[in-house]
Image (cartoon, rainbow, N blue to C red; front, side, top):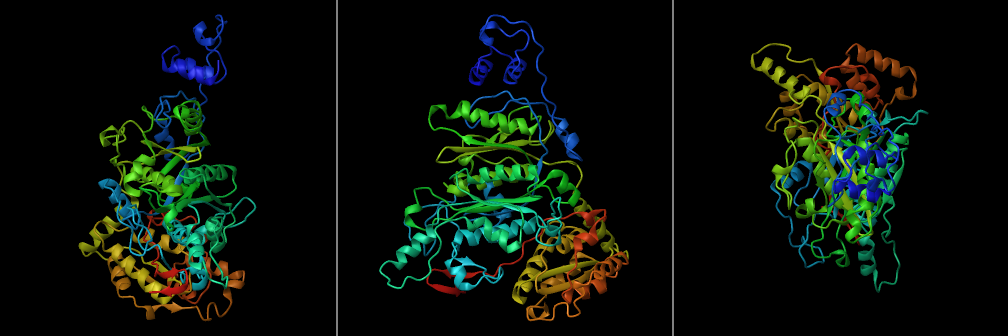
Length: 619
């Protein structure tokens, strides 16, 4: 009896769950009806036990153990029995998004909660007439931030430019552009072991260039029509040593990229991975009715590594599968069911009910038909849903149908499933991460305690912390400082000072224009940052960095470690401002408490200008 017949008989009740699982495992269980076995009654055989799931390490162990095994449900299909064989979960530790009428991740979440359509007329300057779901100002880019020549920026596909900015923001959200990025080392010691897995729409910018150049005799440089550099540009800019792949399976591209990234992490090909995608509608030929644009990226780490590094875990990815699913009535049958079984088998014990599926229909109101970015929009919706623990509106399903939003029956799960136009379908299972449901974040608790002492007039509310900011230019530095000032004075408790300072020291790249402050509370720090002017920056762009060449002396590392152990923050500040390369992640090793946690912070400020065909930047 083949798999399809076993599943058919399981659905119509001829086989119970245990019998079906045993048959799928290749063993004929006891008491199987002869008709079901496909032969005369056979001697009884012991039922094959389900393979036990690998217990996660750390706080996730008790969480996963609370939930029983569950049937799987393919996209639009019925329940499928699964014998779980869990693999180590992977954590989402950073994210950056930009969708129509939502310029950042927080705005995307607000938009998803409202559930309204973002369809609109094309923005000014677009050569289109129909309604669609458009991003704003896609012609703008901060070439100076990334050290890209303006002429090169004008010839670079806006999809590549937009993905580069979004990838940087996602890595900053994960605290992974500074010395913590250097600390991602392979077994042989190779640093910056981060893979980039990207998906992009077609190169329509080259079509615009071809149309603009029609009739011109001097064949000048034109944009490339391919998209392979989408991932490679990020890898080259950050000197990454993990794999760098750009994939195109139409709408399912990002989820296929996710599947490859998970496999690379589990094989040890990289220590972390960035997965994302982008799609822009630049040429009239690529704008069918209801088309849309979006960009986004997530940063992944194995859960065990993420916990050891003190990362903020937004949710977990438990399993994934990819395969070709033919179109037509059989699409929800055998091929799709095999994908679901494969993903659920990796995921270990599931929830009491099969995970609700997020798919292209879930994000149609927000991004329309977003092509290669569809999978990114679907993945982002599931991550945000699990991160916030709040059901979201979706066509055809009331929010109340989402299982157990309070989490009383175990960790909440969600499935994401997208099928590409060519038939490649990807399916993944995500799970909330909630090791301490009732406890507030440690940085929030720390902030409440410190502010209570300050209000009571008690001295010594907090030990001084060294807060560092840097940027490529003084103007960028001032803009970033003002962004942080607004963040620290926004409603709600800010992150604790120790966690904020550590996240900036270890998680942000050291750029040539620098500012450093010793701070004892976030209120005073916010006032200082709000008043920062470009001329307050220490500018190392034109020479003068590390004039004594201390960074080239091996004894400097021991000297810096001694300064750190003695809390000589004044001297460390002055050395860093002088351009000495300080490995803050190495100095911070062994620190405990709230100061050992890396928290999400606002991204660096971009100062964008227009870079388009036929000209350089214009403000």
